[in-house]
Image (tube, rainbow, N blue to C red; front, side, top):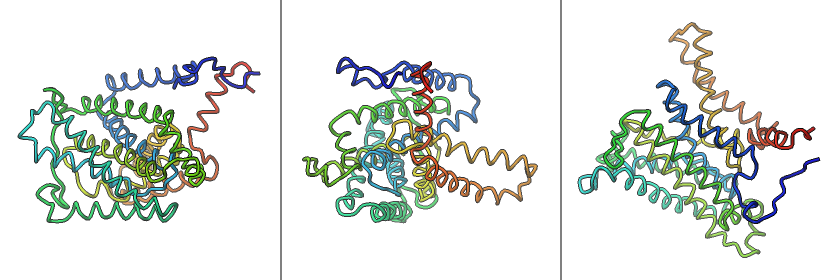
Length: 355
């Protein structure tokens, strides 16, 4: 009976797609994304763009929670930092640079600033962990939103009423339609997902996993907790900053309320449902978390006949659905949807010997 994949060389052992099913799955996903961009209607494109934005942020959260084992409930703050950094950067230096490179510069600056903020927020991880670290990161979320809403920074952030966002421009090509933004967001999501997959095969990725499994043992083995915990927060925050920059490019206006606690909880819920510490976990989790509200909206509209007065009951149903999903997966499938997919792929790979 087949029990695994024979690796006869180091190159074969280092391959990301080490069997035919993974290669076929990746190729099918790319073809699906291309076909979606070419033939889907505007509503589907809108949902796909939202999924891409959230996916990048959840992948970043997975770095610090799933791979390094550090709990965080405030990653929406890094998304906010990335979004507002992009807008402020355009206001401050936009007139001094060609429009064709401003998008790339703003994207890079948003990632750098968010990573720096992540270093600061990650400092408590050197002393506390678990629930205490979650509360510390949650406090950072409230602090960032509080600062954005202050009148002192209103000329740049717009305060509580928000601010308009710039139109992305790549070397003279203005991405002023949702379909063009879909191409940009999807490309960045795929590339950043592959980057994290390869990160795990490096010394840094192995250090993250060692800290997650047992930080004291990792330190005894020579892994610097100071360096790698802060590095994981910086990488994670940088990913969320990238999602925030794309958020600012995608939406015509950003508001502080878009980055409050609800977004942080959605990111955590997506990671739990999809599967922590796995590359495809954020993908499955984001799809479920964003599709559930849409399905509830369609079902609720069908049951109530589109009665607007019943709309006030829909939001609580969505919150209840999120809670039930988290509880169900923690109780019955703590490894998330990715574990179910793994079992199916293993059976396919060993066919016809699978039982």
